[in-house]
Length: 314
Length: 268
Image 1 (cartoon, helix red, strand yellow):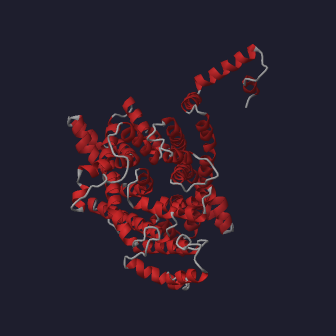
Image 2 (cartoon, chains in turn brown, orange):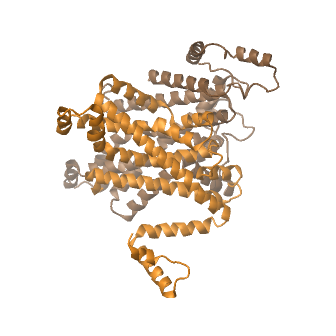
Image 3 (cartoon, rainbow over the protein chains, first blue to last red):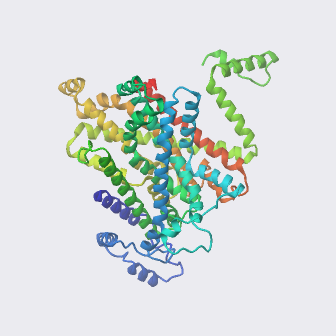
């Protein structure tokens, strides 16, 4: 895991250094004299040999320092850490809610197999899954924010709002109102996988002998569905958790931008658009670290849930 | 195509009977082909919704980059993935280890952010988007193809070919590749949808090819032009529906293909 992170960091370093053009292009005013430009390049250490720059980069990254943002004139580490909680709450919240909704919905559709309800439900889930998530976000914005004015249009807090602590802020009604639409968009984007997986697992499990046995015992249908079938169908769905976390990392960058949600994805896009190399580098590195860490967490969670699968075996 | 159906197409200067025959044929086709019927309905709906000429014209032109990116990227994903999978599976050993670690790294890189960073610095063009997608998306195909090759390698016909003195290249190209082609095609058709969605996302974020109008670009245009607060639904609904339909089409193609490949699934 650390190895992958190291390779990603190295790749990133190479991409940013080997790009055509001067990384300071956005920083150096064209009116500077050649001497001043040279002085700046020396100050940023860009005249050192590549391997020395690389060593400096590695040491600094490991120490958690990522340089100074050209655009914001603030340390990158500070900007990135400020954006992290917003991203985390959005992504984790959406993944968990998507599973809480998707899995029961999948079980329900499996139960309704062969009826019009199933056809409609599956088509709907597939259509929502195929829709670009930023477009879904745009529709939600146009309908619920601009037309009905139920929800705010952007950001995480109303102007002028002050909170005593981060926790106070995250649990305030104002924050939750801001969170609602981006969260809903991500949930709609992510629900497809747990839903379809749960449905097909349920169809498999429903043909097993112990279900027939339960029917013969005369148990009520609802009890068979919940206690006997769903519990056994749930396990592979949980395995997909890591996969969904991966998908969400694809989705939240765009969703954050639609709703101007000040998280890592928006920071990255802004930095790239402003050619703010240090900030783009820092944001990307943290996103990559987040993805790798969440994958590991999902793996460990699965091992804990199903002891038959040991981590070494996979 | 049969000559009769060509006759049936309406042409200017045709007689009244000719027009009636054409309409009858069209009606017959629509009655028997649900998909053609649905297609024409959707088309008519779009013409109605996007009646303002600009939007409809952009919508039609926007299909080009989407489909180009979709198919070209999917082709390269399938090509690279299959090659890597066959080579890793056939040779095994350190080559296999290196290639699979590479796939692990490609798996660890968050996909969309990487595309954004690369496209922004390589310059906004359609081909750079295709390139970055090909760089990252081959990993799934490669893994599945490799697994398949590992079992194929031990089969009798490969052994026979080897005994007859086939070179490794001939073994891989003539004996192994045709056998993993269906799986490669399956993953390729899945990649079409991914590629189109990614192109739309990248264009929406403003890193798309400025010289081409794509559906993602239309959505970005609508977004920054305050189409949302103005309630200009006819501006931003059609491009999204287009993307959705194309992605769903790719999904259904791969789904149908999967049923052909693995008939066990068909009962669902």
